[in-house]
Length: 219
Image (cartoon, rainbow, N blue to C red; front, side, top):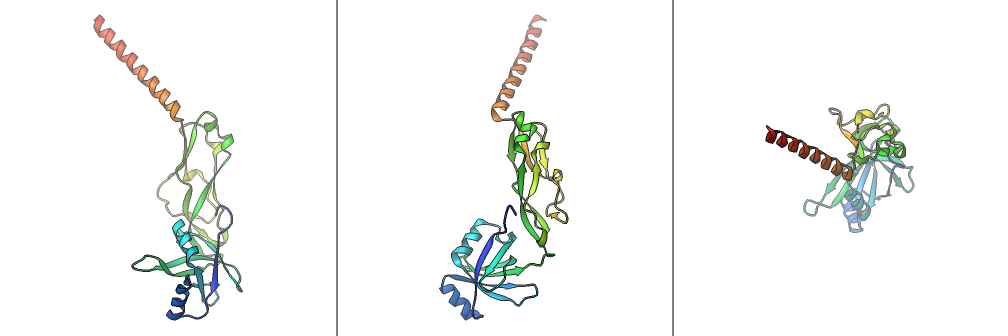
């Protein structure tokens, strides 16, 4: 995923149950549990401000994290649930699931645009517009691609588009949306060039109308 998997720092929580969870919240922490794999569930606390910031960034439940807890090996996790206060809508508990390398998960994989300087369509004066900067895919936890590559050197003409079918998908990866060939980017004429073309079209239209009127008058 566009570089390294982001770290998520947590502390091991001593004690379980509602009393320990309430004590954690009073100390500005959000209690949680890490489950799955061949290891016993691990109760944790995450600083409220850290979790709240992550949640505001969006797509918390579809982001793979490298969980770091002192005294434990790092492990890849994905969020399975965030419980919230029914009145304030603030996080009160979260569930994280450990992932095996063979686990299949949904993630947003970023798009990487390469060889823009060698793009024939851009060299002809076109301007690239990004329609999608990431694509939701089903991938294997042990083989998550850093990005999907768009080779712009293959885009020949102004007006051409790049669709998802033009991208080589990683082996074993599947699209969540697979019923249509959606657009990733396009190379269009600059607005100034479009205006000149429109003016030229108007001039041709006016000239044609003028010729028609002249012909009518002569008749």
